Length: 471
Image 1 (tube, helix red, strand yellow):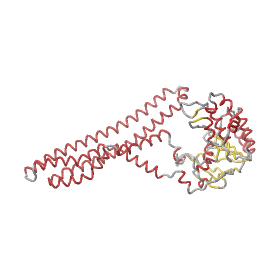
Image 2 (cartoon, one colour; image 1 turned 30 degrees about the horizontal axis):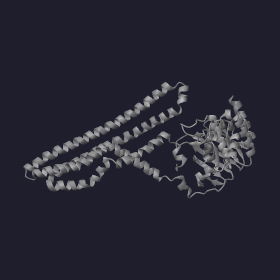
Image 3 (tube, one colour; image 1 turned 90 degrees about the vertical axis):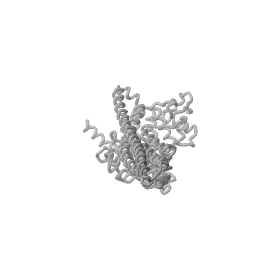
Image 4 (tube, one colour; image 1 turned 45 degrees about the vertical axis):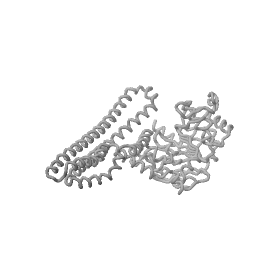
């Protein structure tokens, strides 16, 4: 929760769950027999010294076996390390595919893709099972070789010990004592070789824990950052470049525009041109690859990110709600909102009648699979109502469905935008001309081409010419 969104947004839910579950390997190690073997390791030196004192030359037998165990351990570790990485990738791919299948079950059935989906799941499951089979096979081979070394050590100890007894170097009692000590010397190494997969998983888990602990949370970073008591609403982009990943394609480059307090900026462009990414950059949910973003003349890299996000109202394209009543979810935006404020916001979002028609009204529980399921239209309107409630100087609105914008909620939004000009800085992602006509300026994102920023009339004329050429 405390990590920066830029660090976790690239990882899927299944990958994050798999990483968390790997931490259990640390607990299993300290509660298992492998940890006991490590505790016995220091006493092995005493056992070796005792064998050398009792049986003299016989000590070279366990020493030779220890060298054999070491070579076996290094060989198995190099093979198993690679196989574990392949198994982790295969398991993550299968888990991610399973979660995606459940999330898009209706779409898969609606398009008749069930057979292809089953075939792909069979392929991913088969690949995962095969890699895990290879991992298990390597473990069994290592355990068999370790057991063979143990048997060889027993035979060599008895054979060499009998020879020393005939030579008068040691007694039969010393041979029995040496057998017990040799067994105590070799047991920890036998256990070590049989637990190579678990030790490798432990190493990976400890490495991930260390890397996680080394990352500063946003709260720790905020101690050295500035915090704005209240926003005025000035936003500026200067030659901002964004790409997804270090080697990913450029989303947009050299984006420069300025929004004064109270301005309405429309952001338009085709699919995948980065309209929503502009809003995420302002909320510091993403980091630009290059360029400078300022809010109220402060570089966002110098600002306390969580405190800044709390002062910005945001309507995402896909709204999410917490487990709780509708009223509680609305009050997350403004805990001091009265019943009248909530009712006015719902009316403005055209959600009041549908909410009041529910058996429990505003007390209806949402946000969980076993709770009341909201339609996508109602969820979007509730997200709008939540933004209306939040008393912030900056309002960010991602692209909304055309059906909603053409309905009463869209007409109310248009009137609200017109009334809010001069009072709230608003960035609206849209492709509709009637909403772009309300803007003071328009940002036109064009993918690989340089973005175009200009006045409302200039950009609308350019868009019209572009559409005529495309037709």
